[in-house]
Length: 578
Ligand SMILES: [Mn+2]
Image (cartoon, rainbow, N blue to C red; front, top):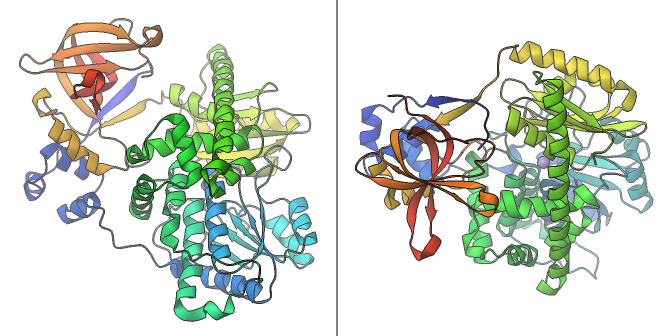
């Protein structure tokens, strides 16, 4: 819980006929569905039951037919194909998805994942040239490439074809590729725009394997040594779920379906690499949730690319036996610990700078001490604490690398586009982006971004909104309600865990618990009912808890001491307004 002020917004109550139409559900759950935008009871039910009029036909993606044709032609001509991936969990998952699909249809070739520090983000000319020298005639990018017009044009000059699959916001100039698969490009009719990089790799895999099913099998002759394993695109759902959650794209529509399917598959039979990571974290596969992907598996798979090279994560996800997976998982776990340590250290240095220099509309911290693989995490932490767009830069001689995170109301990728003349390279989304810049241009960048943020957000205080779903009484907070709320899973980006407000509670008991007494445990009552509540990491926050409080919280199940009970996890707390 952060100590900065938050603005409480309680959702407008759903109309009585809506609640009545969903009378088999607890009213609190019906209200949550209404708040999530499912204003028609049938829609709400479909969301809850995971029914969905998908999956969408992959050929609705602009460029898909050309991509499939080009890939088939390369396979027929026995031309090696390269997959050009990215070094984050989304990019690595996408690489593995496409590798399995290509292998299954008899393609041969290579995989290239760039080195974050030696090559940088995206498609680089030297790597393309090297692939061509190795005999590759076709390169397929996953999770990158949309901002690499120059490199793709240059490759065409020496006869290297490129297919781009990328979900990042296209810039002004699209690369002259053989095909571009990106639902955000102009006039792509694909109905769902929020697939991750791995989601798009999956759609390409689906298209390739689907055309295979249409009886084109005879065209896909691999070399005699490679015996393609039979593969259904459904076998790849676990990887899709992993990259989708790790990349923090909205868990709605097609993504919700993909993540649900992937979680079910992982719980049944996790692939050896994921099983090995779960073993180290002591998590039984049956208990995997979207949070496990976001907070346990994702960070470990990201750690290799942040500190050394993402190929170790690639090898882990490709591992076919536990013996192969275990040492890799241990290594990733160790890198993740180092990553955590660096994140804490840099974040503390950055917040000291922010506090010393005054909190501007946009936070901008640049340092020679930062490693560029970590700056994005620091920007996230700054945003969490100060609720401002945050740009964090690792200064290096010559060229520096930065990472930005933003809040609603300030589209950071567009802000970077507006400064495009300053960058060597840049790209991203509304809420997260990155760039490479000549170091001497940093002061101008800071001034221009500051001006853009001031114009967009104004000088007034930007206060984090807490979107509260409902105001239940303590008596409503039951095991049955919690079980019903679980039907909203997988929760995450754009489908957050429900948030509740209960007013006028009396504090019966306060206890400091956990290491360094970091957490505060309360017993709360409304005069009739009593519930346990926890404020995690209260220290910087609630030095004094008054006797009567209004609390905003999520519901959780606590099984400590062998006895289960519903528990309130407090996100914000105020003296009761009587
Ligand atoms: Mn991505």
